[in-house]
Length: 231
Image 1 (cartoon, rainbow, N blue to C red):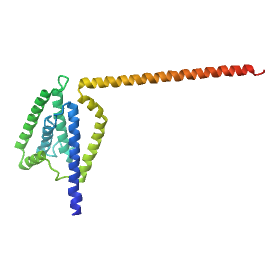
Image 2: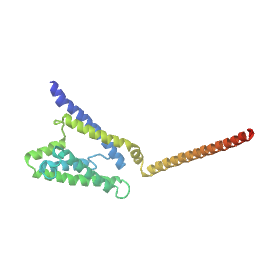
Image 3: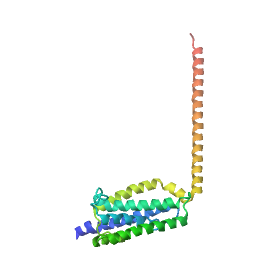
Image 4: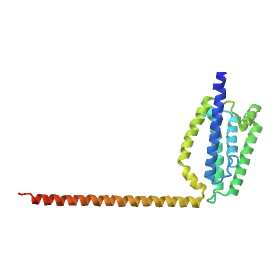
């Protein structure tokens, strides 16, 4: 019972918690980048692109030239590549006029979802029964194969990405206000920086003037003392 808890149950609990945290942070970042609160992975084509990437590995196998160098990491890596490519395509199309347009975003997301969904459906059609089942079960999602190795890998990747996202948190908050507001915030920050630089330069000039004045008085006093002393 102890081995079942430590080796089967506990890794699934930790991996499920990490998955929830990853989805929450990635959703927040996606909404900040697209500057739209309705954006989610299914709408932006991310989920469909990931499914297409994983389906390629399931159909062609991990021994193919595409997945052989990756080994057991072929499925998650190809899913990431597909999701990233689909998301960037939707982003490029939706920002083709300089700003994120909601209608363009919706249309681009629907188009990318349709194309990736058609590709996944075609791969499911030409796949053998075990491969088709793997595609279906992967799309549904499961934690039955969770182990401590997977927990450590997901935790390490999430920690690195979360640290990077924290560094850019203020920039994303400014972007959420819109481009005009972000420019105003940038100009205000630049004005404050210029004021601080001016104050620092004035302080340095005053300190330099006081330093020269001290040495001038020191020379005068030294000269008066020397002249007062008998030869």
